[in-house]
Length: 59
Length: 468
Image (cartoon, rainbow over all chains, first blue to last red; front, side):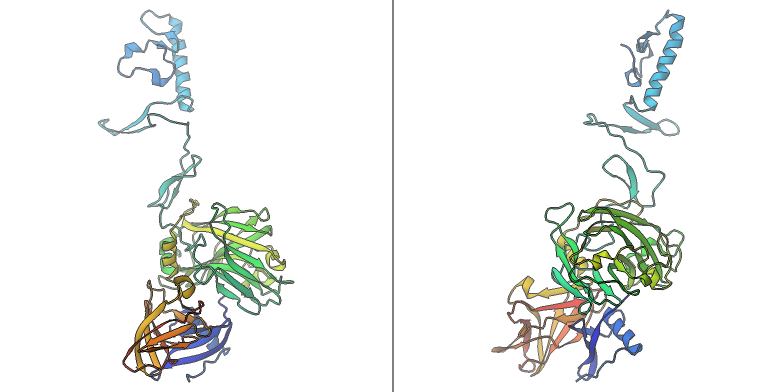
């Protein structure tokens, strides 16, 4: 029942470290912390593991 | 004076009680007066027993009759009132309450008994109206803590999820309202629509789920819809064994506020609710369900969740979603321990806002005003400004950061100037009580301080999302 329409995902990097994931969900840009208790991160990881989403490297 | 009822008798001087209902029992009375006076006395006892005549004080003496507990009416009673006691004892810690009509029952003590946050739909930090569409936003927390989901395959559906000034009891109260725009022609088997509030698991430990002493809970709410019929409402538990329990309610009259009260037995199986900051119970109101989202047998009792057929079982109409301009509204949602619905627990706006901000916090120019500063920090490098935003309460978990994105929504102040930019490009790191924001759209001096504020567009905002 957790459904999110994620249309893009890219790591945000700071000082050479990935610190969050920039995603667009339902057309809204979000910075998602890499914490499994965060619902957005949990769904991102679910979709990645299901092969439905790829997270691009940071610029 | 004739003693016509028990309260007429002199309790200290027996010789004063020589006239029982007009029958003399004084010295030398006629023998027939013995029978008659006993009959009169039993009539008076009968009148006492059935409540026709009362007594002044009910005295319950202790074992040696040295002291007593006494119950009595006030000196002056405006109107005769009958109190009906509950059928047996309540649970530990419960208090006796009245329904306003003299019927007493056991309920959790007033104050902090509503497990639902924002049940009166007062707080809408994200705004008072959200457009939903099958090909657009399909999941949204429009009103704080109440998520709407359009799930599965929809081909036409869109509409508006709004906070409106329409309330069953208050002239200026608020309610949650769904209005269908373009109706869905028909429902695919795997399609469904619902509103839900997910309750944090660690706030539900007193329900004792998974144990034999699991507590019943009672859900009450006002609902109004342009569509009559039978709707499903229920609980879904994710932890350990996934469990579900739906019940149904009927909207009898179109466009009329109706109060619904539904009691759910506690779940004695399923392994209980893990004591953490995850989702404990989903409380869901179903608005539509295809044939594949009903029929699983989850109505009436807890069962282990099998598949989607359990999800909205009991939902008997999809007309809210298949009828253009159809509406469905709800407010004064209360979920409490016990089998009685007590009056809705009013909380102040500030109290509800603080509770909501554990899950979502928005600071916006339209609410706070022009000149709002989000955070203060320093230039790590010429094109690298990092600022700190303190959150008003500890959030449930590390929040997602969202920001508005209108041109020049944000402005950084630096020595002798400012830079405008459109969004906070990334969050350098967030915690449950603060967020570190970062932007490269600046040109300051490394080591100098700087701030990020609104750009004066009127649309600037930042949001922090730790919803379940």
